[in-house]
Image: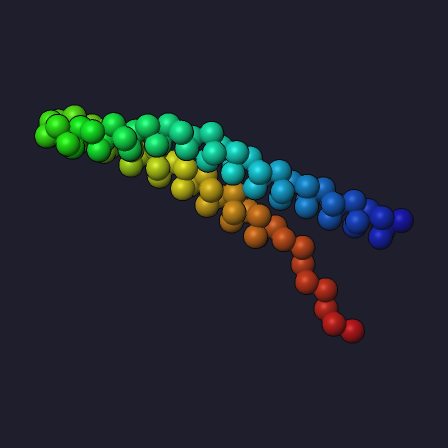
Length: 90
């Protein structure tokens, strides 16, 4: 009975790992079109030479980009930290 409980706990842990990784990738993918739009708006403002607009778009772009990087880092970090333990060689 103990081996079955251990197998069930490992499969639940593995499902959580993969779920969090997929959620992180999905969140990053959902934010990607907005990042592309903000990057285009920033480059367009830079081409027009409007310094106040350039600074605003740059700030928004950096904050959103950092948000995506943090979400991906947490998802990937949890995925690797919760990996199954290596079995000892007998």
